[in-house]
Amino acid sequence: MPDTYTTIPAAVPASVLEAIHRVVGDKGFTTDVREMEPHVVEWRDNYHGRAAAVVKPANTEEVAAVMKICHQAGVPVVPQGGMTGLTGAGIPHEHGGEIVLSLRRMNRILEVNPLAFTMTVEAGVVLKTIQETAAAHDRLFPLSLGAEGSCAIGGNLSTNAGGVQVLHYGNARSLVLGLEVVLPDGRIWNGLRALKKDNTGYDLKNLFMGAEGTLGIITRAVLKIFPKPKDVATAWMAVRDPAASVELLSRAHEASEDNVTSCELMSRQGLEFVFKHIPGCADPLEGRHDWYVLLEWSSTRAVPEGGTGMTERMEAFLGALMEEGLVLDATLAQSTTQAQAFWKIRESHSEAQKIEGPSIKHDISVSVSEIPSFIERGIAAMKQVVPDLRPVPFGHVGDGNLHFNAQAPEGMGKDEFFAHYGAINRAVYDIVREVAGSISAEHGIGRFKLEELEHYRSPVELDVMRSIKRALDPQNLMNPGKVIRI
Image 1 (cartoon, rainbow, N blue to C red):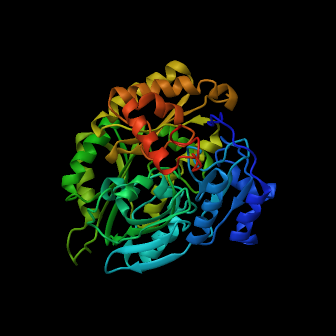
Image 2: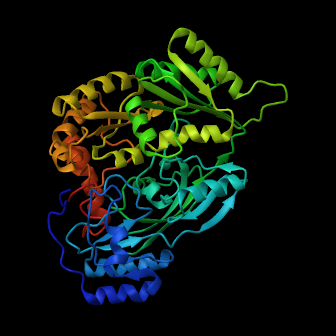
């Protein structure tokens, strides 16, 4: 991928590196090429950068001290979380004139308050650890992603991550009450307030969530936690077509008494890659179908003895839809283990695609009602560019977010396929614009979609973004060349 810098910074002076080293100590500093390698290469192998050093502060004060040094010396900084991003936002550029600042050592759960339904954490805590900690207190933290075993909460908030339960709980921005942020000049903004109502001026926390480290570094957060579901029903079904999935979801809200937590659409092509490459994944249904839905309902109310729970309601619901022909076949999870097996198929799509070979990924959103026509038009548009490419559409029916991916034809190498990168993107994104959708639903912009953002967003929006960036980071030191160019 091309470098997104307009000017190349000078090499980082040795005196600056020595000053940073004194702040973070030996455990928090390295310039060894081998030790830095995991921090400069994107997991999908799309970006290979270089860094003057990798710095791992142990606390907020060390982050602030490092930022102050870099600000005074004019040294750019690239913040990093769990390194699971999909747009290259956490990867340094190729010139080597940046410092990587990793939050991995800042991995403490600071407080859990079950009565107030809050949890305070440092930015480097792994998402799965937060989920497990909430569960240990009979609570739920609903952000759920395929990379939850390795992604860090700071990165989740910096990209405003979505996941499979946005339909019911909202995206990352909806799950935060307060933030602590280190600004580009090293000042600390302490907004760690566990308040649901706070109307004192601009809502600063929402400025930093989704900014992908270009305005400041999120160091701590007060998260919302929720009552733990006591009654969950999970179904895997084959559906007639994408239009059936939209109709199914619309009716599921009423049938479940508005307890739909997830509704995921997948194509047969995506499943074939998963079954081929991911051990332990098997087809839940006997027959082969073109389209599938993973549907989950949950309630915080336990099923009373002899009463009707979510499973019974969903079974009756699916039976009615099968009689109408919307659902072609279905199976209900009979245990937590079986439900997890269903989810593993859905969450393994990205990993399976990586193993299968080169792919061009689109993280788009459209109105839910537009999903069926968009899929049909989008596939046709991509195939006009590369007729033999293999479409892999999947994603969140409930919020209109589709991962609309194009897998290279069998036998076509990465360089040959990526020669069509711009044409395929333009074919898809032009349709997205026609239906008033978004070219990035939950993955962010990073470097990957920088030019597309400039092409598809209005001059007014871009000017406002640049104004905010210049106000907070006039030297353009915070993750430069990502999200917005100034």
